[in-house]
Amino acid sequence: MNCLKSISLSFTALMVCGIINAAERPNIVYILCDDLGTGDVQCLSKGKGKIATPNFDRLAKGGMTFTDAHSGSAVCTPTRYGVLTGRYAWRSRLQKSVLWGNSRPLISKGRETAATVLKRAGYNTACIGKWHLGLGWVGEVTDSPMLKGCKVDYSKPLTDSPVSHGFDYFFGISASLDMAPYTWIENFKVTELPTAIKAFHRKGPAGPSFEAVDVLPTITAKAIEYFKQCAPEAKTGKKPFFLYLPYASPHTPIVPTEEWKGKSGLNKYADFVMQTDFCVGQLIESLKELGLLDNTLVVFTSDNGCSPAANVKELVKKGHYPSADYRGYKADIWEGGHRVPFICHWPKRVKAGSTSTWTTCLTDLIASCADLSGEKIPEDAGEDSVSFIPALLSGGDAAPRVAVIHHSIQGKFAIRKGDWKMALCPGSGGWASPKDPQARKQGLPEVQLYNVKDDIAETNNLQAQNPEKVEELTKLLKSYVDRGRSTPGPDLQNDVPVDMYKN
Image (cartoon, rainbow, N blue to C red; front, side, top):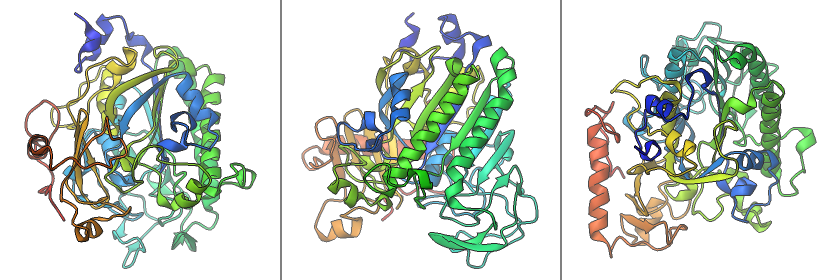
């Protein structure tokens, strides 16, 4: 039996093959950058990147780079939902756009997450950083970005936080750094009442001492503190740890600290990327100094593509392309919206400098955690999660997933199978031109079909010449929607009716 070739390798099978020792389960650090484009990582930029990222590149040099990795959505909240639950967010109530700082929880109580899987397996678990999945604020909450009509009693403990979803500890912010309330939260309480009013792009209640510029270094320092706390048990193998580290950078507000301003020679966004790279380097050095790096799986990725807020036109004029060869940016259905960096560094098990063409999605974390920990996922969980561990441990050689689904900020669908990608909208489905209304005025067809092997820039729509491929992919997408899952198992229900053709 060639156990490395099976897409459904179980933990038991991996142990039989002598690949994983149950006593040497790795620590897991999942670094999720916010709005970092593939082209912003120097080693992934295909020669089109001008930002120095020595620490991102160091991870790639010492580990495996997945060259066909995707976020579940082209924007923040839905991707984060998929990361933790292994379920596409369009199966939930969130059919488009994102949540806000005072939104109610998106993850239902009792739903399995990567954290619950690992906690059950005996891991210490923590979330440090940007949550953006809704919290249990007490009072009248709102999904308005300006918090109009919101009457929250911030002095009262939250009724729902990351600690409600498998994490032993949480320290971070409620949503994006440009969404109020601007205050730190620890477990179920704010650390400082938001009695001031501040504007980090959007105006809202803030802790008097809270400043956006402090967030990146503070999250990094807290993560290092967590490593130190976990090190004694982790080094003996008694209790490994899982740290979910969702950074708020380089998302707006773009606030590099004083020592990083001007470092890139490009613009403030590029400076902020460089500072984020530096912070990742601090994390790696800390793990190394504590004797933890060798048996820690560090996953480095981003929640979607680079945002136009980076001042893309200015960057391109200076020779830097945040999406590298891909079309579009954050929010869009095109590759630049959801094609993300994905690097796995695990010196004890992963070949340095290796690459994998395995198509992976950020929904794949929960199934991968199950493989690494020996825990099983219930049949009604991880509906869209396929473990990337077989590819990781085989040197990149493993059977690919059948297909992956993409989703834009406007809730437009695309599906990719093999070399073919079909999008059910005439334009970007997001912010880039042509937007869907513009595309219709131009007479563009309602379906886009691209051979991404031959046309990674998605410039040649082949839908008219390949009606059979459109029909095949439409049927496959419909089956994934109707079955409530895209993986083997019993049919399940989506939380709400899902319309593939919503205009």
